[in-house]
Amino acid sequence: MKKIAVLQALTLSAGLLAALPAFALDGTLKKIKDSSAVTMGVRESSGGLSFTLGDGKFAGFHVELCQRALADIQKQLGLTKLDIKYQPVTSQNRIPLVQNGTVDIECGSTTNNVARQKDVAFADTTYVEEVRIAVKANSGITSIAQLNGKNVATTTGTTSVQHLRKHERAAGVKFNEVYGKDHADSFLLLESDRADAFVMDGQILAGNIAKSKNPAAFKIVGEVLSVEPIAIMVRKGDPAFKKAVDDSLQALMKSGEIAKIYDKWFMQPIPPTNTRIGLPASEATKAAWAHPNDKPMEDYAKK
Image (cartoon, rainbow, N blue to C red; front, side, top):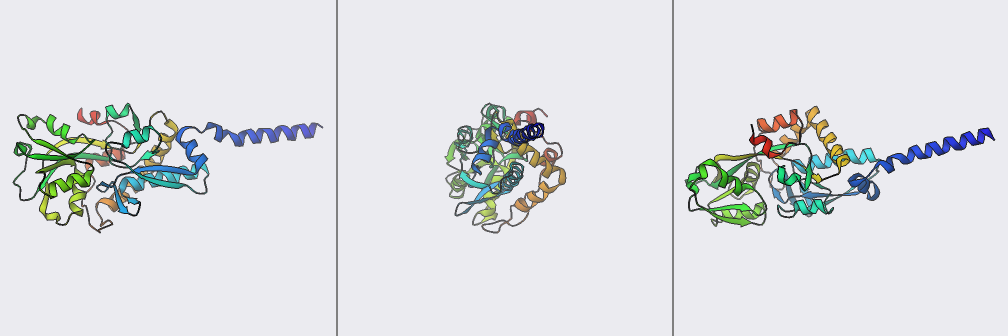
């Protein structure tokens, strides 16, 4: 009888131990474990970070980083398969879609700032961006002062024109804002001469120029308007999922693998047109890899 009781006790203990991880899981990790599925928010024209290949397929530096993180999470959860659903998002809807659970992880070109941190959380910074100005190469525009009286394009839901207006050299400069619904639409405004300039993240400008019919017809000019940490976005109040993503990213940073992934998307020819963006990793981006952190843009401005 004693032997049976001991065996029963051991069996019960083993059962409880086996069940512990399931009980410990909550938030997005539990959702992924229960459904064997995850929804990744992606952009259609965010330069080398996130872009469409057509046919519901997406690629880019941040898309690959998210795929790597999700593969690590799949392994940790013991899932034999993980169905990744790709959900295109825009600058306007990306935060609400993360908040309401439609998107589990957003892998586009989102700036981590104090205002957004009230609504969502950010993984460690993987790219540090400089906001710049793209113009036609024959426009004669080389600085902010020359935008006076001009039409300046930007994408609805982004902060780029705000930075332009706040810049010390923009004092007394009056320009008209025209908006594209996404980055490709904003670039089209410049390409079709409906805008004299397009203000946006430098790599997004470089990516759209590289994919244009005549890349030599455009150039990136003027002062750096702001320095912004770009990061993968996740739901607020879900520290276990954020940690799982951060752990994966930090392993790539520590091993140096992240630099190889960057080189693949920014220095080598990329699909669908087999063009090269040609934008080496900045010193600020390399510093973010060397010292992983999720500091907002405002901390960069203090330097």
